[in-house]
Image 1: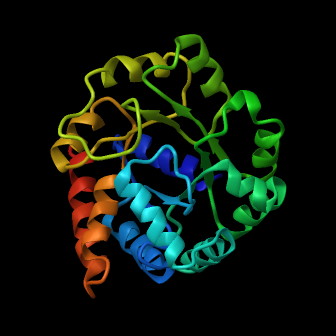
Image 2: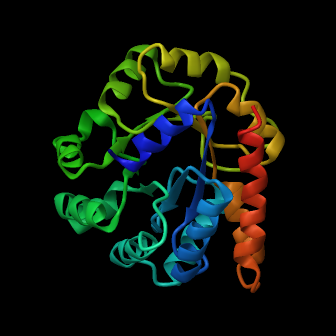
Length: 266
């Protein structure tokens, strides 16, 4: 069983909510990415999303854009990232999703990238700019490799298209709780309850809510409506603040642990 499916099965059996942490791969360097992954696993993170550095991250706000830039400056490339994931697998089975733009997959060769990702220990791909209608045989390749094709649903997605999207996905549905780009917000969106209910009417897949969750109180509030929450920019911001500090991993892991505790207290 895919690690993502297995983890959500465990969460369901224990009546717990999941916590998904996003960081930019290679920020501040790939050794830190490895060490953060191990520390997050120990802190109770259920799924790790690794943003593959890209020069034009159109879905991302400033914090994650700068994180991607730092990843590029550290020399992170898709092959180097897959090598680090293989290294992570020597000591951790935390489910790993790559948050990636299609341009990178196209450049590497879609089939070749998927095969190598599976061999390295990747469990899911979240391709930000690949609509299901234009995915061709992507899902068949993913199924053959045992990787989950994770799709996005937005607040503006009409219900008939929600139904089409969730039928094509695997692992979990990523609900973007706000229009626009990633980033920390002072308040959570007001339509999370209604939109998660709408999505749930069309799929048994777990729903993970992201975009804008920045602190434990927000994590606790959103976890009431979803099977998992996703926090990215707030964690990337911690990495930006402490990136050159020798205690980077410990400080960021403690922050993440506070979010994990909040999401699981519901």
